[in-house]
Length: 326
Ligand code: ZN
Image (cartoon, rainbow, N blue to C red):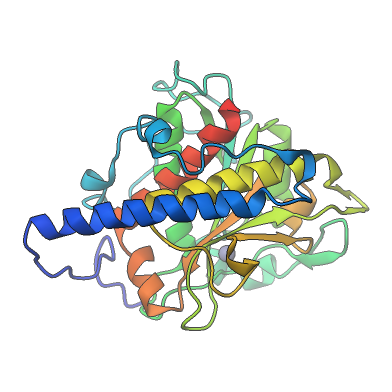
């Protein structure tokens, strides 16, 4: 791997001090409008239960939800060790961080599922093992993708997961990761689902970045389709998962300024699938988010930026907070 630095931040040209502020404000305004667009999109007939996603376009409410960490985040090493008190998949039960004694999410359990595992590349036989996902059998896990310069999706997902964990703990949530780089490979997709189920998670989000063709840009949130086959029965979670996903999409647009995918989801940033074991086997509200396309150079410039990853985590966090506060 040709890693170029500890944080994979591409060199940023020096600009006059005022310009980034203007750009940031413009992005915020545009993002707010897009947030409403997503909100509008998910409010169409067919949205089960007519779940409200009222916070999507409300910068005033969510702006106060948590301190913005983007200024300091750019200096953080994305390979940092997990902080003490974080439960990982190897723990017998979710444990609360010492910093999470109070806050609006007190008593809420959030499971973060960092997609893939940095070690999967060295365990191809193990991760190719077929597991039962209810509708059919599928590989235990996959290696994930990477940018053209070799920044792996697995490293990206773990970094965003750490940032998201910190933000949610600041809100008082009990946070558990399905893996924290603390196991040689995996877990398999069925175990990833089981971890959320046995934790009785109030919300689960699986973090990913896509590996699509250059020119394909933007993020999308993947929602569970209703399936009822074998061990899979997503019917009870389709509605709440859609609500969770819509809130994450709206807040992700607003906070990151990134547009919804231009290659799936018809501009809504929302896609429904029934081929993902991690969703099929979930019994608690769960979505995936593909934060961008690692194979597109413009998206890759964002995904490799620590400051942008902090915004991504912030957008996801605010979506989860919105969902859990109702
Ligand atoms: Zn992935």
